[in-house]
Image (cartoon, rainbow, N blue to C red; front, side, top):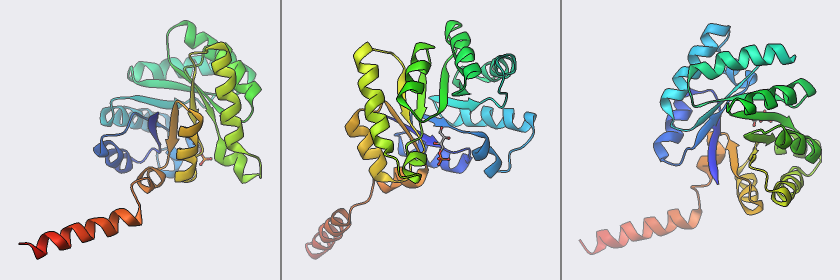
Amino acid sequence: MKFFIDTANLEQIKEAQSLGILDGVTTNPSLMAKEGITGKENILNHYKKICELVDGDVSAEVISTDFEGMVKEGEELAKLNPQIVIKLPMIADGIKACKYFSDKGIKTNVTLVFSAGQALLAAKAGATYVSPFLGRLDDISTDGLNLISEIRQIFDNYMFDTEILSASIRHTMHIIDCAKIGSDVVTSPLSAIKGLLNHPLTDIGLEKFLADYKKGN
Ligand code: E4P
């Protein structure tokens, strides 16, 4: 399973990259705004900086909601760096734009996916990634993991190449459950990635090994 980090924070991206386990980055307009990155030129420059920090795919989201606007924005984003993946909203024009870019060999990520039917349409349009938002479903008392399982089954039935990019991850168990289901990618905050490192028995065991070493020296 690939690990993406879901942030526009350069320090957090560097920290995840330094662990040696990072495969890519996802951003969205809210994550950009959280870092105080506003205005078209600043946003484009920020994407360039992110691409310099990592080797893998970097999802950059369009703001337009009409086909022509998405194509214009997406083409501009794609020119920034070959690592850029055009992130498109799961609406009719987003699906049309997804088909347009996939026909041109440009990578896409269809975002804001909340149903298996939406994921199926995105795969038919040739999406590189679909992003089901499992945390936001859990937030409204709906089983987000069940959606990941449904999409896995459908994609396997028809051998779609589209990768499931599980998003809106809230905690470490989401990552583990996505891995059990067979999600191709998980994009999560740094806190959830780092949370996977921890186990009290590891800390206790290490403390004892070091204490025993000191006794003998
Ligand atoms: C995915 O690409 C989105 O950026 C993200 O996972 C949304 O997560 P949230 O529900 O925590 O905002």
